[in-house]
Image 1: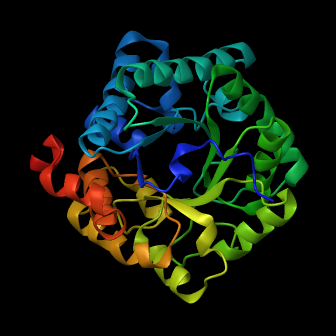
Image 2: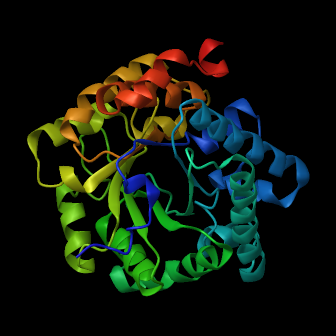
Length: 333
């Protein structure tokens, strides 16, 4: 059995786009101060909201130019209880921030969505820890109870699904999936891996996916890999086919560096957008059910344009024709 995800348009056979590295774009391109990488704090003032709007609108325009659908995950990766407390947000303020995040994306959808360009809004639920190391596993039930208030707020605000991004161990991811299931909301689980292809917890990706599926009766709509470079996870995919069919989304990093190296970087490592796009070509053969592609840390519209173009050329001929005729303004720069 799989989750209640039949209505998610990104699972209807067309390749969808998603956005890139929100935090790194805001910090290094927009020169915004983001304590604890908390993008949701920008919702508190007009200039911050404008910066978020510009970011998301750039991907809405890119998706329109490619005649494709778009999945946008809210800037709420840090908008859970512990991180909120560290940033001075009480329960009510945190709930308001989560609502404002979804309201912004709903307004964007009103302006940009068309029949040919459906937009899916994901409520972004990040890890309780920092997302780069595996904090002590507290158990599945504790994780479910911890994340459920944010999940309920995001659902109340109007999301289409819950997106659990940058998961570092299977127990927390499973807890989030169970909390979403209890709320009857579709959920997508995205694991991150280190340079050795394993989760920060030491688990292999196939094992983490199998554990989450086993504990949830296969409830997640699909799985993703994010915050890692293709060279970190491609060897694992080549060696093991147990989980390939369940992985339907990729949000790769621009850089080949490890999480620890990226965390210590004072300058953005944007890598090479075209090379990153090309690196996704071989992944298409390994992931037969791929449905959503975009970027993570260090990526912007240049990278996502290149990734989508290369993936579309191998998977979706009609979108490849659009890709061949269009280059984003950022890509031309």
